[in-house]
Length: 129
Image 1 (cartoon, helix red, strand yellow):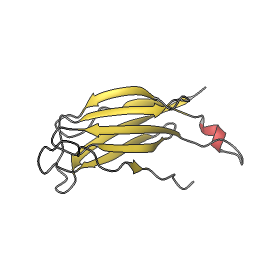
Image 2 (cartoon, rainbow, N blue to C red):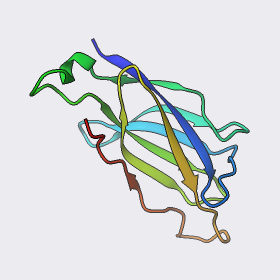
Image 3 (tube, one colour):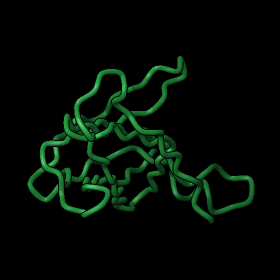
């Protein structure tokens, strides 16, 4: 039976690290047909954070022996706000029984422009186990 871990997203300005309220946070994962299954859409509060969201993670016992499965599940994260560049994260790891806090620095837009609305995606590297 799968376990769960939780995810809190903390959004702030990339330079001053001031919290950004009103940012839209979308948590999803890639389905087998390469489409996204969306699990949560939240808006950051005045502290720039979302509420903790429970996500499915594999059984911890699967990683306790050689050749066992990976001890985490991969998720995708998109954070958007009309005054900042879009931020995307792929392969965000959620471990069973662990509360993960993902910091998301957003870069302010110099001015609203058409066709330039996102930064490069951030690929989260695997955790050393």
